[in-house]
Length: 411
Image (tube, rainbow, N blue to C red; front, side):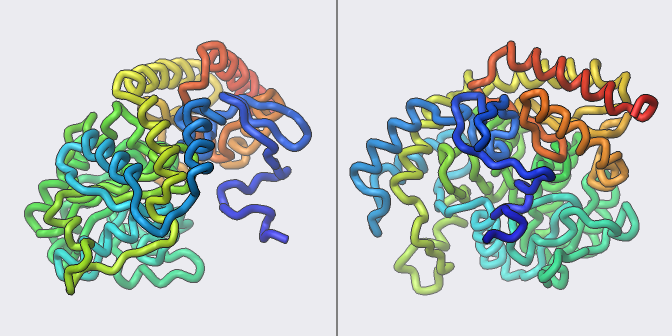
């Protein structure tokens, strides 16, 4: 009844895996098998499953109504919490997904600059609208230093979208010199998620800020996944000043959410009743159920909690890198988010990931499922506050066993 048995492509697995319920650090399938969940709905469950304060907030709000058709005080409170955590942002507009957030951010940038073209990075995933459904995981994107746009099936965004290499600052500057005056925005993840949890190389984001100021385009930082870091996102950790920030995942407490944050001079272009404003609506934008869940979740995820979780992730990633190197595997990431790669050297961009042994990565993920651990098929794993040190120790032991079992010399 559902194409491929899934409503999101990344949930497809072979054999299929269907969930029954989640409990803290565990996801239980329909057969009653519980596995330690290191996917956490692709980074959105910062406290694991059924976090008590979040569940209580949802139940309390559900009894008061799930949607009003009018703004609520909860919306203002969550916006205030976000603004307080993002230096340089003064206003927030909520959406229902990260896809909608990046789409709206680009509308704001195009309106402000009176330009139509944008640029994104090869391997970067920013949702499913046409402008960004370009060169997400291309099989052939032309020269490495000058990637050519490759549109996803059914998309036509490549006509207005230029593509940049994630691992070459010199090439980025050269492309910007040629086309930057035409761009409304450059959209970038500070750490590419879908491509394999690869942090931007040192100097890239700073260079983009400089180029944005020089050529008059907007720097849009996609922190849908990375806002969890340090309590202020990677822009706070790395002292980056974007023009607009897109958010999602953890700010909704496990319910559908997205948001755009930025300075009043840009965000005010959305404000009714101005006659030339950007039209933006959505039946469930800022709905009180999501706002209640987001408030409870974020209140329990203060800066100290975020830093503690990042530190635990850094320690785990270092241990895994040392343990798995002997089996020809590598690990990339930052803080509480990381990715295991079937490649001896940590990849620097999507092309390196594409060249790795995807078949072996599938066998590793399947082997971990058999041992009671749920990782994304691409090797991504993320921590939640529900994970204990015992969970991390057990994961390292299981990964080592599966890595040895799948090593080419003994496969």
